[in-house]
Length: 352
Ligand code: CP
Image (cartoon, rainbow, N blue to C red; front, side, top):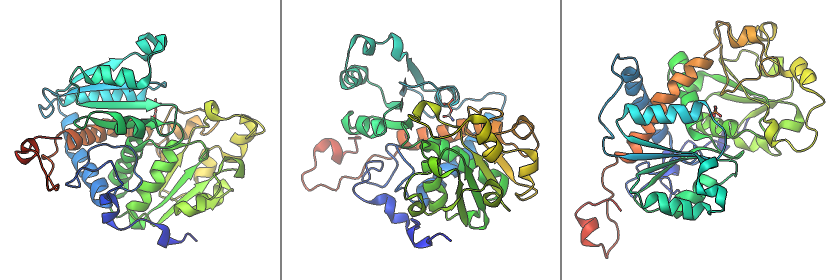
């Protein structure tokens, strides 16, 4: 079984000075990864999202919390769910939203990322939402933007997709209650290339989930995955046995260089989730997938569209989670000034 000592349970972990995600008051400034954030922050995101889920069920789905703020979507990589739910979340909070079309931007004329960012921040923006194919891109941008700008990672390479992980935690909590310690969660598929899986594993362990499992062929498991606080299986039915939640991952073909699998058909035969295999899980298990799904590769249509599936609920929950993260980062209290030689601007509470 997993060594629980490797699990980050100390809520102070997220307040370490190295964590650029938090301001001097320990409030969320950027949201770049679930790694290193304490359970206090993750639970605050979930609780805040619950309030916004109520807004999203009303006939008028708009609140004025971010009126006057400008949010810029910078998607250097394809997206349907993440980009549109970020845009909807910002609009429902009454922010102004700018979607930069990278293909028709001056990036196509050779402008560097930093020059592009400096020009956009000269337009007095408050937040960049960034998706990029390079791992570390969101951290790089957060380290190079003006101090008053918040950066949200909408997926960077195979590193992290923290808002996806948090909408997944909200989906689990809404279906299974808030005691994650009672739960067995199984993550199935291409863990090696999955930023979603990494962010989910950190979040599940921080929330003290009883049993976090990963299930995949060895060729799709990162070396040392056991050290992330998960139990590892290569047999699907054994891995999902008595699971409360099963998270299916997409085969990330765009990140595969070389032969990781004999064929998609063989993968489906061994790792595809069918109604028959689902019988191994608990009778009330939920089936999740971050999307986009490959029907007949990772999951059978009868399961994807069946009674256990909460795949479309995940998309709805994504709006509420992104509203929560936007308000927490942009609506922070002014930072406490801990330096001895503070300027008058910081003394009077202006955001740095
Ligand atoms: N889950 C997810 O990130 O989907 P998109 O690539 O469509 O945004």
